[in-house]
Length: 131
View 1 (cartoon, rainbow, N blue to C red):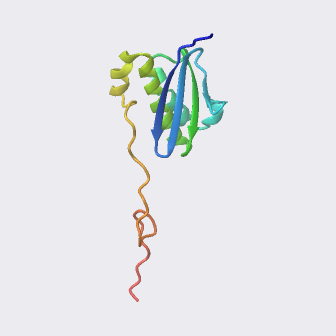
View 2: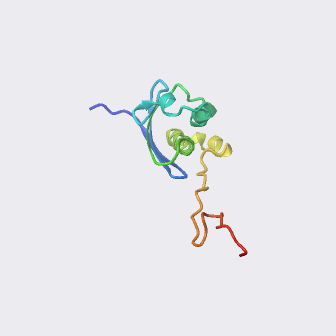
View 3: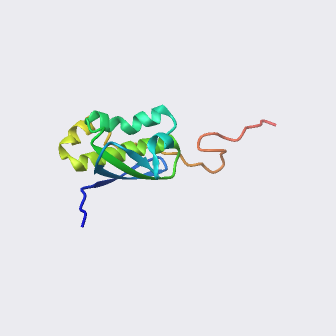
């Protein structure tokens, strides 16, 4: 039976949920069965995804398989950064302090504010007329 070492982690941001599998390999990142360059078209999103790998010098050491659901591309990129950071921490606990110092292990708590009754949106009101 073929036993390969792998680490799993979950990352979330806004409405995005990401499941990450980290395995020793050549440095390929596959998102929803596609290369991550084809999935994240914006350069900034690709940079966000790779930040924890460059910080820990693990760019070409792991193959990463990702399943993403929900949210927009930038929220997904942030969730993926958190998931990769958590998986790297699981693979080597010594990286925890470095990743924590750069803020990659902190879940971004910001989310969409709910719409209030009697208003057009969360903050926007209906136009007031005097007469």
